[in-house]
Each structure stands twice: as structure tokens, then as C-alpha cells.
Image (cartoon, one colour):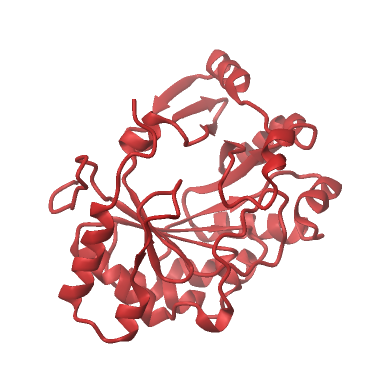
Length: 310
């Protein structure tokens, strides 16, 4: 699997590339960091995203994830996925809030999308409106079920757990997921240097340690994900739950195999830093050769270093 994969100076292979294709969104979640605001007219085009992925493929990247903002807000999202899929990656996925999935799931599957992660923190309409400021819960649920129906697999629900908001809704969400062959990911709220309100994480943070212990006690099987920082998967009565802990630790950093592209077309070597970005998109727009673009990618990789070290 790791043949021809470029490694950084710490021998960490660069297996996946996460590209933020827009920061526009149709909801306004409480915990959103609103990273790197870019006007829609300045967003990377489908052809530019294809070029980025083509260079990524040359240096050994196996997986592409498209995110936002809300990536399905882009009218050319099917074209984007089709172009990227033509490069024959092992895995192409999208992180979405699900509200446009009913419209796009079938077309996305047909052009090469493999799977989706859907951000959904509650099945309660009032709580959904509190978190997102919108009344789109039913649209999100229909989109999720459509993704399952058309064969995107696995469909995962990302549920950010927030104290005094939704920590008591895990069982209901798990039942919904189990009944519909969906994987539930419980996500512990993390702090970010980009967060609009530094106090938010402190007020709503809910540690998942006790929940993870409870899952371990009742699980029929527990498996560890090798390339996901030892993240555990719990299999319970035919359902599946993953627990995603904060990434600000040495274990996450030591095993990080992901590179990122910001919405304004910069290489982001580290999730937890914004002070070592590498300009990329202007070089593509200026018609630089693929060899030069590959050098820029390698430069970004060489800037990678574990944010947290033992």
C-alpha cells in the first residue's frame, strides 16, 4: 500500500489529502471555526482541483477527502468529483451536512464518489435549530438515507458531543445509525486557534472517556484503526461506533498521514498550525509545470513536523 508514497522528515507517509473546496455554508453551527474565508468567485475551479489531485497522485497520495464549508453548495460538485475520480484514487469521500445529499447522492455515486461523512449532532428538531440556526433536520435525514440507498459506503454520521446540548442523545443517534447501516462517529469537541469564541470549547466541552469505557464494556468486538491514530471501533448489537478524541496529542501527531489544502489554495502541512502554509494555487494559475508543482508539494511536506512531541 505504501509503495511510491512520499514521507516527511519524520518518516510519516502522506497517504491522504483533504481539500476545503469552499467555506460557504447553508448552516451556521455553534462550533464552526469559519476557517480562511474566501469569496466564492475566488474558489478553486474544478480544473484547478483536478490539477492539485493529479500532482498529489504523482507523489503517492491514495485518498482524497473534499470538505468545506458545505462542499455540496458548489453547483459544480459532480464535475469536481468526476474529474478527481478519473485519476483512480483508492478512496474519494466528502464531508457534508447532508442537506443537499438527497439531490446529489445518486449522481455523485455514479461519477465515482465512494463514501460520505455527514455532520449531524442531533435528531431533535429544536436542538438542531439551536446548533445550526436552521430548520433543515428533515432535509439532512433524507439526504443521509438517500446516500445509503444509492450505495455510498460506508455512510458515517459525525456527532459532536456538547455538554448540556446533546450528550444525552447518543443512544437515539446510535439506534438511527444501526437501523440504517450507518457508522456513528462520536467526536469530542476540540479547541482551535481559529475559533471565533475561545470560551465556547470550555463551556461546552464534554469528555468522552467515560462513554468510551461504557462502550468497551458492552461491545461485542473492539478493533483498532492502524492508520487513524489508534482510534477504536466498537461493534454493538450489529451497530458500529467510533470515538474521535482531540487531536492535540503526540499520538495523533506521530501517526498523522494527511496533508491539507485551504480554501484559498494553500498547502497546510499541519492541522494545528497556520504559520507554515505554502502557496500553491497562484502557481497553477500562472501555468507552472507539473514538475514545479510537485516541488511545491514536496516543500509543503518538508515543512511538516509533529505539533505535539513526547
